[in-house]
Image 1: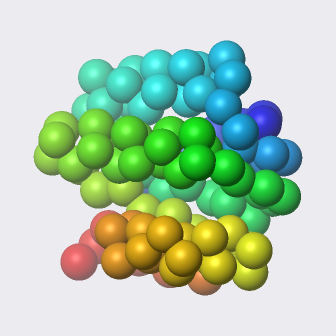
Image 2: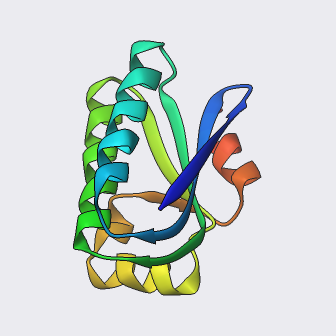
Image 3: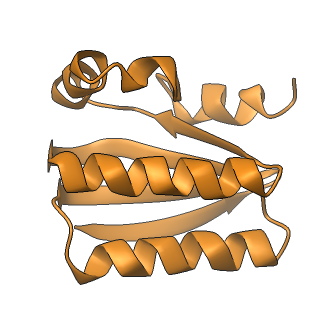
Length: 113
């Protein structure tokens, strides 16, 4: 898994790429989330458009990040999930937990509500 960040005027976009299956990148991801929260950046978008595969560890990583952001008074959403990842979210019923947007623009718009 690789990731890069982009700052929008009221949100941080974290674009994940490749396979999300755990490993040292998971720790880096959690540290990055905690750092953003410490800086007061509490609107987080996780872009899943380039994710090929995700296992239970990857789902756990997203749940952990969601919980950290929510506990800090922020909002955590996902965007651009592929059909394969959407199916996984539906099967695990996580689709009822995460706000899921088709585009980054719609995810950004959700923070204005």
